[in-house]
Image 1 (tube, rainbow, N blue to C red):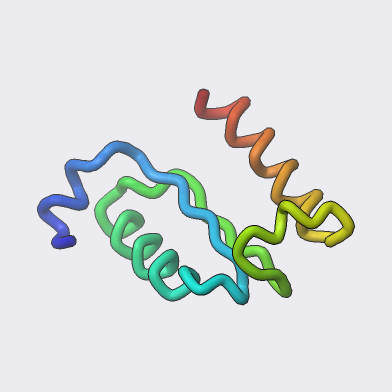
Image 2: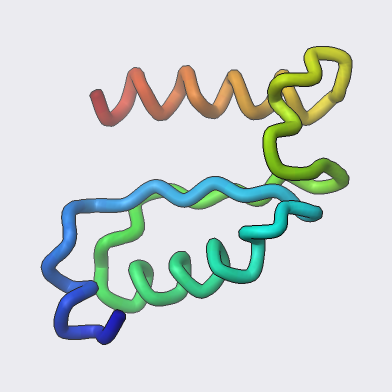
Length: 76
């Protein structure tokens, strides 16, 4: 997506994890939306993979749910 279109999209929240197969695309999206003033929140959870939050014994799972709660309170 070019900057002209990216500047017209709704505000964006980007979440990824260190070993997620979408990590590279998430970082590209982060940079694109940040450059165009559309990024409102970004996080990359270290040491885990895509869908890690379904494994409740991982340390980053608690962080993911706390972030989700914070985002919902702030933006919804």
